[in-house]
Amino acid sequence: MNNNLVNLTSINAIYDYLYKHFVDNRNVTEQQKLEIQSRFSHHPCLWDESNNKFWQPKHTFQVEVPFFGSRRICLTISHPLAEVYQLLGQRTSPTLTDYIDFIQEIAEESVRDSGTEFDRSPLNDADKTCIIQVFQRLEAQLYLEKGSITNLPILNAENQLIPANKILIPDAHWWIDYIDNSRLLHPQVSPKLAELAGSLSLLKDVIEIPKNVQPADENQANKWCMKWQNTLNSPKFVDGLQRLIFHYHDSELEIDLNWLKTAKVVPASQINVDLVLQDKSLVASSIPGVHYFDADQRIFYLTASVNRYIMLCHFAEIINSQLGNFSLDNLLPLASIIDAEAENISLLLDELRIRSFHNEEIINVELSPDATDTKNSNNQIYWGAF
Image (cartoon, rainbow, N blue to C red; front, top):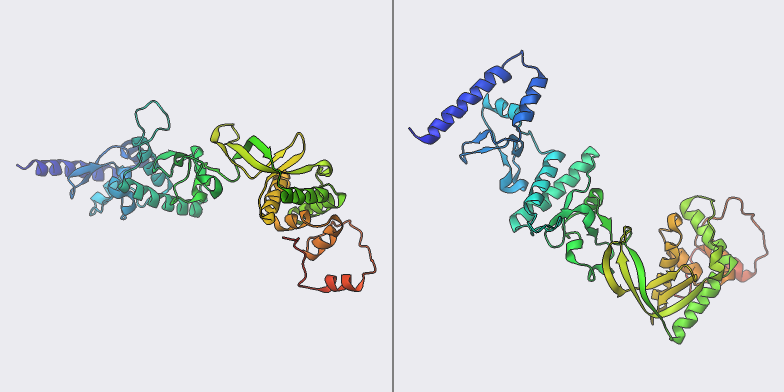
């Protein structure tokens, strides 16, 4: 007799027994059925006649699952065996757990025997394609179920699956060329999913630590920095910055900005920085930087440029970074008051439609004809001499 026929006869006999005693038996409780499913779902016990092999029930589904490649399958079995397959743990359709198990499985297979915890082999093309599709489905499922994940293996730019907290989301493109691809998120993986899994942001979570700052001798850059320093040191600038914070954060809680009144602004011919994470682990070493704030000396260093607007934008960025939880989402008004004459800041913020403090007194003044025209114009907004 053919061995396959013997095997199939034996298998069907076992399935018939399970059907009679556990499926078509009113005395069997749901708890007992769950215990059977828990016992067998991880063991190859579902026969796939078309491929002549057994599958783990948790790797089989009642719907097509091509995004799992050859590692999972749809098994459609005629009644009553279909109910036996479900009793043993066959899935109806993929859930969050199924997607996560699939990713974990491939990640574990890719670990090299090198003694290094995160040394992984690059995925082959077939597994990479499946992983990217599963990531997409996982993100959609998380959105629907309002679920969460913790430190799931994520695909990096070297096609390796490594823990999410070892990967950086490449949202600061000016640094990407200085960082090893093994630390960067794969371009086809959603940054939103990577963030949910525990990946860090290159833009928000990486800290610049200056290694070398060389002052510049360029006259024009020095003139621009001196002008901005004069504005920065003015009490009117501090008032204007407090007003911006109030406008964007809807809070009258004031933060101490009086230190700006003695701060200096200095152009630099070169600024080299190390990039590190909060835990002080090094991301990149001695790469070109664009600004640096020496908190001890209260000196803002800006890399000199022939383009005044570029330096101004970098200056607005570094001032904003000193505001902590009160940082601004829109830096244009901040750049505008940096570039303005101190006495014009209040009027400039009015024209930019920045709210005043609730307790600020409204003072009526006689405006000159020119000033009246400026106030009444809907088109004249002072952006600074960019």
